[in-house]
Image (cartoon, rainbow, N blue to C red; front, side, top):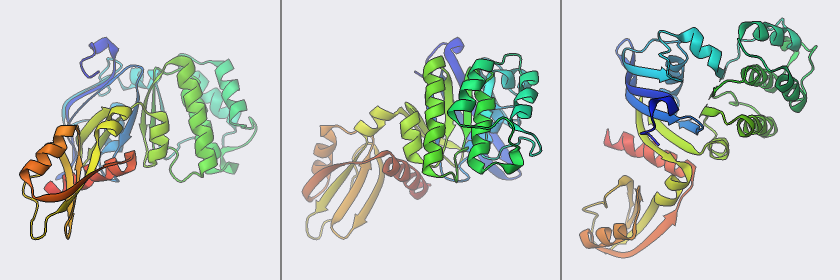
Length: 304
């Protein structure tokens, strides 16, 4: 997927770096997202996700590397990029004095393409009152309106940067349903950043995990779940682990119990562990996306 021809790539970053003073927020990040992908962008707070997204949107200038969004350099063509991208950040910037219909009229005049029928369908789906002022809306309603505005100009790429943070589960599900319906109907590309792993797993077919501005892993979700395992080994009395198996992401030792999280797991992983260490018992445990995410981040920090 990462070797797709450039015309088939929605996003491409090569060696992208961003500094704020002496702090490196994004550290030589290389990432390709093909068109038609629903990409979940994961990382703890301060990992560099929002900084990366702002560079993609032309809101921040990179300090190094190259960035392309739909074949355009956002540092040189930010207006053209924004015309083809729907962007919903965590904090919305819709004027609070506007009514729903006024916000729609404003955006309709700004974008070169606007689908009135789609806009009406989304308003109905989200049960938004055209005459209600933003100042009188709940946070969930404002996010719904932002999503209507982002989708109604039929963007080729939809960028969602933590817009559902702090929303209750019912509202989050309504928003996800709206995104899924739009994407299925129009085959859009999505870049979706969120701390809610369940939301990401429902929406994304591919994920990337970032920490301290560096990409730790990029994989389609099904492959990541099927090939990342936690191995539990019970050491022989008096023995200590000596050699973790290839692909070890993180390891923990609690008395005689040795827990090893391994990527690209195969039956040979167990043979390798047994051959290099004195163990009484070995079990293989399936783990979910949340544990995989935590182990990649914690393992990276333990080895840094």
